[in-house]
Length: 292
Length: 221
Image (cartoon, rainbow over all chains, first blue to last red; front, side):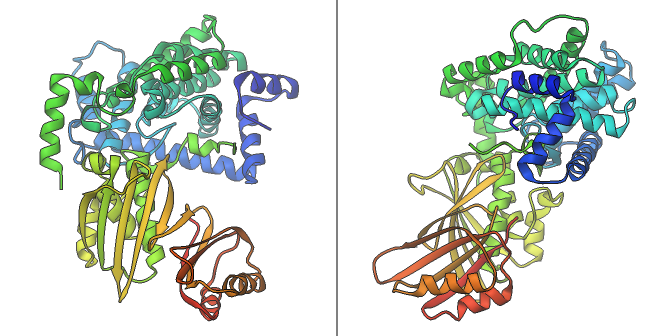
């Protein structure tokens, strides 16, 4: 059994009357030889780490981060003081994803998803919208759905900023999150991949241009952007808006865009925001302060 | 192409900020400490390429120290590695260097302790995965996904067959094996990656093989 592309997975689920999480667990069982119950158990562990990273991320002042300090805390505080325009759910999405991504920058423990740089997207979108409403079993199934989407992406295209830019990290993470939400909303398997495709389409072309080679600016706020995008795209798919371009073709577009991106925009910190006067100044300052 | 594991995509569980610059660095330190095999007292650490350029931002330095202290990549006490190193009496120094035509995220670790020393060169190749490519100047290739036996011996006929005979007798299956030497008739290095764990008894028996000078092991992790 393969998780090579969405079309094959959809056909298999159709032929064998399976849900996406069922098919993903079966794939992992055949691939690794690990018992399905143990695979579920491991995903429960991953869910626990995601929860922990949200809680710690919101409490983390960013002690070990260089530029990003207390992002999650700031949003929570501003929300409590009714200074924000977004509704409480959007505020949660923002502060959860910022919190986790900043916790990563500050040497906190996270679940990479699909990468460390994009680790705030799935927990931000999933736990902020469904973390209280759904059982852990259902949340774990949502994470298997996300894993299936991510595995299919990785089988066909890049999932690192160095290879494909931020679209390959936050873009793929957003697709994983959108599909997992669509699963929880009771969407069909086709709708799950519609949501994933829409989310990825919205972030195609996003470059990887971190200031001073850190995983902070703009990485952390892009996590929040990708999380909010996932929720919006799950809603669009649920409303019946088609992806038009199927998921596999969207991943292929991502790959080709990544190939045509210059080196300066693929995690080298030589272009984009990293190359702005401010980006260069911060790089010089930090470089001098922190080198051995 | 090998199939991608779903926990490589939703996971790994690690301490940030970077799977290649932080998690992989912890694992390189962890593997190197095991290969030294005795209590580590001194480490000279040479950072190459992207490691040299970005270690301060990604805390590659702290991550390597954490691994050298025996921490795993998801250990929440990684940020405290420097204090723990002082408490453990581990002294270290970092330098930026050029290791030549190797992976951009490479490091050379010269480790000393209890009269033993070893030089290890390895790379963090993405997603927290590593590859150790040189031990004491000998070309090797191991990544910690298999139990590994590294034996240094005189480059003469019969030594390798005797080592593999011992492993066979002890019911240890060799998955991959390589032999390298610097020049003919000097010392050679054998690296065997096995499906089965290598006990201290097995290690001791390999040490008894005629021509074998030193045996090191790396457990699967």
